[in-house]
Image 1 (spheres, helix red, strand yellow):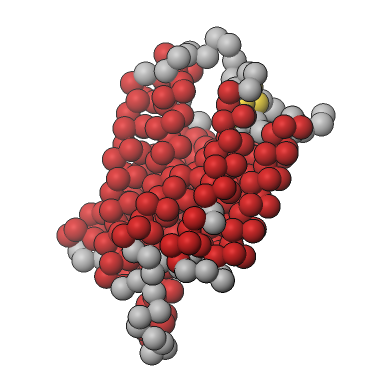
Image 2 (cartoon, rainbow, N blue to C red):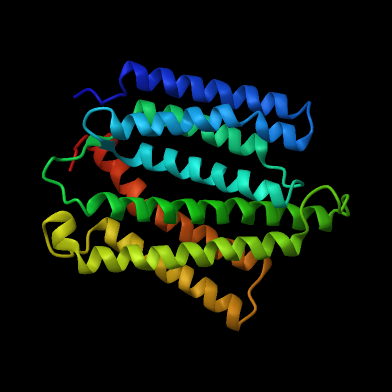
Length: 265
């Protein structure tokens, strides 16, 4: 069986988005921070157009790669907004690489078409889940920046070379808290309205197990920070574990079904 791939317009949009990300990242190194962000707007728009084409052109498609691509696009959106408040945040190259790679991945594996008989509540449920992915992905990016800032402090590097450590920590847990709220809502909706969403009662499949495990991990993280004062490396490690479990819950299980087993179910 040949794996599905995007149509020619989808591929052209994805290639244009990847090229625009590469160009924007290159230009951003030679201009001011604010102008560098403007250089990424064409890439962000083309990436959004790529996602819209997959959902609106003909039968809507969805799968692990579009989910990851949407997550990357949401992280870039959050970065663009956050950069207005914290222009010293320096992750443009990393996010450009993430955006370009995810756009191409979405074109290579566009997913399977959603059934015509799918519940009208499925789209809001998937939207809620992807928003949850985006918030936790943003938290992971901030946690990585926090770890890098901590290493710079240990090495006595220039303390003004990036964002303050405490600011990064505060932003990280704001994203974690918001993501936890959405994850809780997503799980409750899936449990209560399972028959309407999927035409069957709630079952403990791989997606459900990993989702609940990730929820429990994030709950422990938030409790540990609030009651036990968890900070630094310990908090970051727990965050990474929770994010990995969440990644496995949908994107990982769909990857196995679509690419390894080559099934659309």
